[in-house]
Image (cartoon, rainbow, N blue to C red; front, top):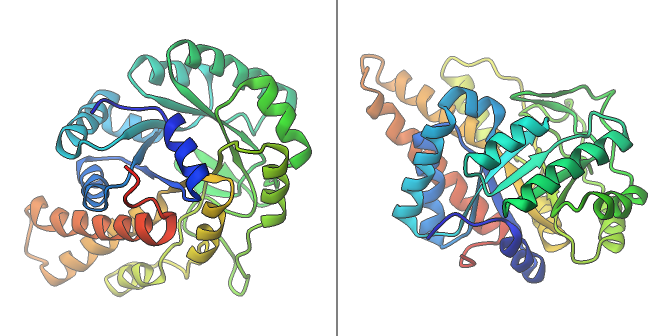
Length: 311
């Protein structure tokens, strides 16, 4: 099966009351773990690549790994640019075979965000590629995204119709309380999503696919494993999975997951190396790391996103 765009995926997800998992990828083991999990539960996938991942792994290598995943799984897979911040970056990904791109103009003024997003949409649509835009700013740090809590802002529901109409985007990332990175909330602070904002957005954009970034749950057990094996990570509290399930039943058709993947891989490698300090073959510690990612992704697909059996 060839690569697909997100259009049909989102149409089915909106109608079915579930969300598609968008998992960030950086290397072979991560792609294998994600796609093997999806194959086992027959789920559609979005594999997304940040600008940092492209710099690290090389665009060509990543695309060839995705090509291998298509052959091995025969699943509908969309390759998506995560947090593209310039027209040039989005154009490079489109020209290089991506089937979806995100242009994040949320750090600009509203009018400049509209202008930049529309420019990307016009080029992408001319090449059969879908586009995700963003309104509102999530706090947190992840790859090239670094927004302080002071600079974060919720999405204004009164802007969404105008933004979507003027830009022509195919989906919209909004800020309702999620956060990038592992350390999402201060000790004692209760995670809370602004479902009132999501409801208002849904009313103003009926049937339109909404995206949640920064939606890793940051599983405490993984942090504990890292800390028990030489790490020094503070307690990390993520978005409760039941909140993500509720969002997936509403207008949210795409939920981004990255930090949980990093934690799963790191926890597995630290545990293995602690138990086998004399081993030096990367295959010995990367295999259980890949298996750990696979189990985590399978849980997300079935119990959080509800997209198992939807491929």
